[in-house]
Image (tube, helix red, strand yellow):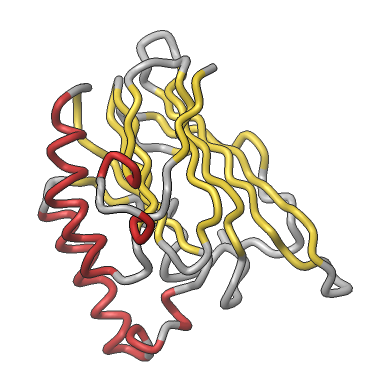
Length: 197
């Protein structure tokens, strides 16, 4: 199995370092250490992409427009799905507070959808964080294509969580996304003690 590591956008000016794609079932993309940054998963039949973007949504939308969309349009078929992940909920970020902040967040989502992506509202971990709290560090996102027709994306999420005694422990979840229907099938539910669904 080939593994491609994706670096944070703030570490490089080269988009090939912070966004990578795969078109076979022998390549796994992984992005480690997504805390306040934003991880982006993009997929269509026969093509999966993973990005490790900056924490602010303006540059993320710009990167999706100028880097992600052209790359994802090069290969694969069907609509391009999109899910975003972060380790710091937008609900606790100062610029996304109260109704005005919620509307601002959904304006960004609308802009992403206007670029032609099907935004995974239920699968994204941005506005409401997985653990209903301010921080759940994403240790690693890993994605790869599976299925006879490369029509499924297998995703593994590893987290750093706190147990009931406030001690650090690891947690994970595993799921598959049907690239044609954009439906998610849970393989392993979140193993930590807190999870919002």
